[in-house]
Length: 200
Image (cartoon, rainbow, N blue to C red; front, side):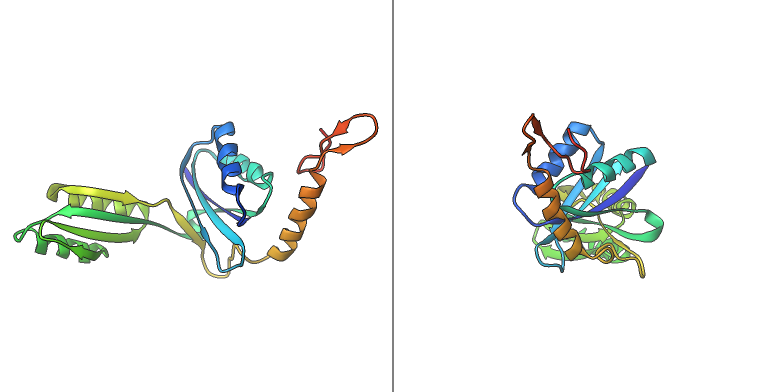
């Protein structure tokens, strides 16, 4: 089963690299990963699609929280969130087929963003399954080029990933985590304090 996990993180160099390395080390089955800015200053939002069991997702959430500069992690279930992918598709066309292509695009909610003498570029933002259906409809005309983004998600209604707990407090907490993560000389041996506060 596919699960959608959203993480808010400080917009700093190296954060995404640490997240990707964590996924690689843990061998999680990641289907897509997208990152973008939020309305909050210096905070980015990462959306990860994980194909696995509930236990797999729990491990993803747990490991993400261990990454320095990750502020908050949420598992957005499909019945409580809006899920969207974006696709740009260049389809072969001519005088005879262009009208039919445009008509199909309008029916499914796609937009024409470019017209040329031998092609049409279409844009569609929808659920993954709807995009798959649209791709199948366009294949007989000849798909010359296509690019699909990873999934983005937003909680429905009053649910808000970027609300409580307060992100300013979380950012301050991150500072203390970084300080606590520095190796300390106890006089007997070097002790590394991990992100959970346990000595290693």
